[in-house]
Length: 93
Image (cartoon, rainbow, N blue to C red):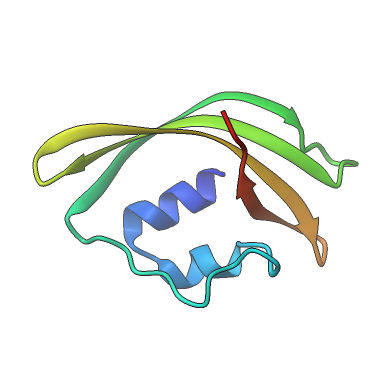
């Protein structure tokens, strides 16, 4: 999760696509250069340890867009694919 946040902050769309599960990965990703990702708060995790194959991360990502502050709150599901953790999907609610 932290590496994906860093990739958003740096505008590294290639890394974001590489760290996305093959079944849900979009063909391309256009990042908004006016959006600046500032800070990540990991609110909670469930599973995702050394011997797990799946886990969830709840987070708040703080950003500024055209000078205005904002927060993205999400609960994300990650799974192992080819031995590495990848983003699968945002979970409802």
